[in-house]
Amino acid sequence: MKSSPVLEPGIRGAGHLVFILGHPVGHSLSPLMHNAAFRALQMSWVYSPLDVAKDQVQNAVEVLRSSNVEGANVTIPHKEEVMPFLDHVPKESAWLGSVNTIYRRNGKLCGTSTDGEGFLRSLGLWRRKLRGSQGLLIGAGGAAKAVGEALAGSGIKGLFIANRSFGRALNLTRLLLKRHPGLKVGVGSLKEGERLLNQCDWVVQSTSLGLKAGDSAPISLKSARRAILAVDLVYHRPTAFLQEARRIHLPNLDGLGMLLHQGALAFEYWTGRKAPLAVMRRVLLRRLSSV
Ligand code: NDP
Image (tube, rainbow, N blue to C red):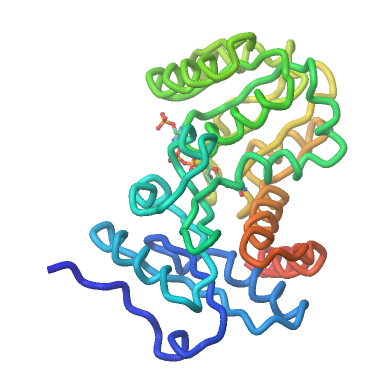
């Protein structure tokens, strides 16, 4: 028999609930960010982590059907597994093959991904420069897929996908070309990507290198001959990639903005209210500067 995800007793009695489903999930910064947002807007909502083992995903989705649950975030490793148990997933998210946000519409549980748009919003004014640009996407995992699709949908001219394993990069290339037939897409090793830096307007580091202290950078940035934008999706610390970008004075962004904006978009799906970005950014920065 399948066991059910365990809810803390205090949580069962709370007013409006939002969960984050993952395994492990204790390290997530989302509860901090969203609970600060609810407090700032004086909403009696609670955002709580729900540690869900692989064989409990379906049960966890049943928990989300309780009338006081407004929605959820989904994180590693359940972003794909959760999809068959939802009532509706829009075409674009179905194409991505993963969701990070579950929300209710007309009594139905719907899934979407806010990662791509969250990434684009995190670029601020740089977003306007994407049309007609070309660049390097390092990595070919779930985050790279969302970011690659967001970039392709923003009118870029082309991108080169560089990844440790060629097969995964090739899969992502084929998927992107299917949806964006006019896009120029190259694919190759990390070294090949590094050699193309001098033709790039931007470079996005979307591998998990940098999650652990002491991780090396996937490529060196020294052949970037001009001031290209360097973005690292990792937000936990200044990674070796980001440190080099700063050392050689490239404009650069870490992953905090994407974390913030994907969260703000999810917040808006659940509540229908504008997310208090400044409050959310402040608590994230405070937490990250204390570790
Ligand atoms: P995945 O596990 O789906 O993909 C991991 C990627 O990293 C793959 O391309 C993998 O290459 C590569 N990789 C892993 N280890 C190494 C290594 N030692 N050397 C070279 N490449 C390596 O993870 P995600 O795509 O979900 O996440 C990737 C990163 O993005 C994480 O650091 C995550 O924290 C961050 N992220 C940030 C978000 C934000 O809001 N800022 C949102 C989502 C993710 P291969 O295919 O060869 O295995």
